[in-house]
Figure 1 (cartoon, rainbow, N blue to C red):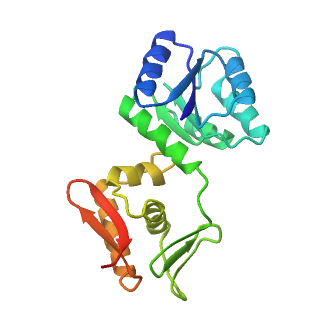
Figure 2 (cartoon, rainbow, N blue to C red):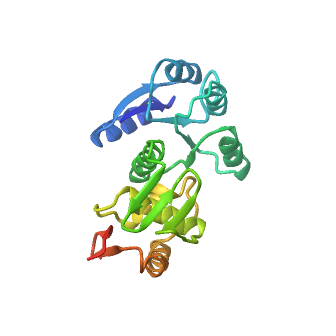
Figure 3 (cartoon, rainbow, N blue to C red):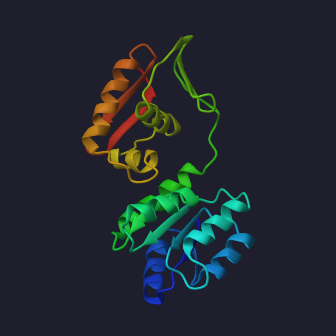
Length: 221
């Protein structure tokens, strides 16, 4: 995974770069907004991690220029500003996520991976057993019968289908379906999975609990 890290604090940039590389990422580091703008014009990145307070042009302007070029590169903003108006401005400018300093490096890594996953093209129709999800039309069916799902039920089920026959943790589900760190607890994930199990009784599939690890969606036995 190729990540652009834009941070003018050289000590912090070096530390974050080493951490991300330790998690298997290829990291390019630049120190100001103009360098970031140039790097984003010439290179393809899975995710861009931008500090807002940059020399030259700030992170908001970097994102604005990126989106004006029609680029869909996911952007994670880093900042010491925790004001709601700054968060709103960043998201309305075109950023995908927002992380306030100081932050846990494990959370940074998880958010980068979540953004990269969401930007990975997925099939228009996901199917298993009698269940089919048309992700373009946002329609779910069991056989020929429409399946009614809430927004979060859909998000959880879509993620499970994308990872069918693989074990996924509750935290992975949260990281994947919440773009801006909305409030969702591990217990809430259990509630949505419980609701989905009831709705999928005749779909020929099962959400199996793998104790201590998470869930796995598979054909019913």
